[in-house]
Length: 269
Ligand code: URA
Image (tube, rainbow, N blue to C red; front, side, top):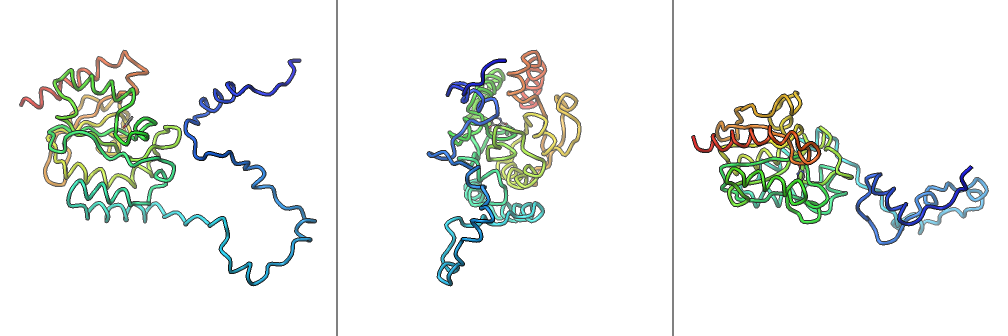
């Protein structure tokens, strides 16, 4: 039998990283096991009854506000997004919106990058770790690949506008749930309406499914042109592979290349 021994700090850190822990939420560790340790019956019996003064004193652990029901949150998001007359208004409204639980664990609201007058708008899925730190979409490894893909067709961040379906990083970079996407959808729809691009590019399946209202996966959807109504007019929309997927599956880059060439052609028409 191998003797049991405590993990080294390095092994512990590796374990945390593998488990998806990549951010600290406090300076001091909290022993949650101690916190939930129920008082024993003997301790309850000996505990003094609260005095009237005790019961009026606010509890040091304030109860969390009840989360909003998803339907209510979607309605509130629609109402809030409708009130935004400009992109700056929309950003301010989004920063005050508390209907999506992702906001509580994210560091920042990642609103957009690029040129609000651009003809091309790209919409990804959700910010990752680097975006959460910097407050800008697509600044990490997949962002660097996206920049190279754009450069290949003569575009950069001065000629495109970039946003995400969900503006807050999901914990551990998981895919946002359909519910989280639906709560955030009114904001990105208003963002598209205010930017009013000629071409919309959905990066990855969740973006395509949420914006184009389709059920098919990205392998089936990519490269096809859709008509998308911005709220002002019909524009052309296309879905392609997400750069993060291309980093894991480089052989698929040739298809994304084809899609980007299609965008270049459409821009020239
Ligand atoms: N992936 C996304 O979908 N969006 C980002 O902003 C970064 C990575």
